[in-house]
Image (cartoon, rainbow, N blue to C red; front, side, top):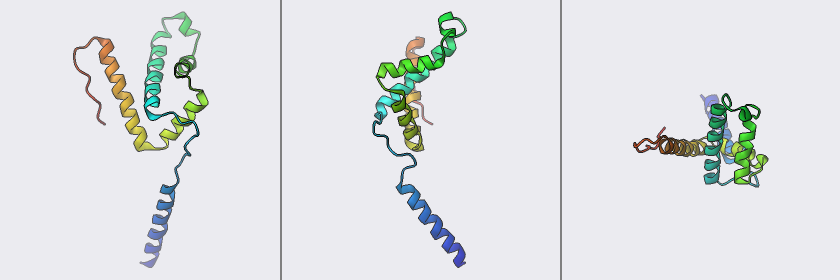
Amino acid sequence: MRIDLKIWIIFFSAFLLSCSKPVVEKPEKLIHADKMVNMLVDVHIAEAAFNNRRVRDSLVMKSSSVDFYYSVLAKYEVPDSVFEKSLVFYASQPRKFEKMYRKVMNKLNEQEHEYSGRKIEAKELDF
């Protein structure tokens, strides 16, 4: 019985210590969460545009999805290293990242409704 108690104490202590330090350190140049949401929306739109048009458009066929990705970075004037470090940092916090991605999906849903001409109001996604 005492061995079980020691194991629980060790496990609980390890849990507390692991919670005190973040998995990924916050980068010096962290993209604000709201801006990151907008960038992720644009990245998804750029990827969809690339995938949709690459078969039909000879100019797009000669490019890659990376070109579309860099066009989003250029729009927001953010270096790729800053974007990647910010993305890794946010992804290392699953609950916050899930909330952030919920916003991304809601914005994409709103834009889909807006551009499709549907009269139905976009409903907020709730996962």
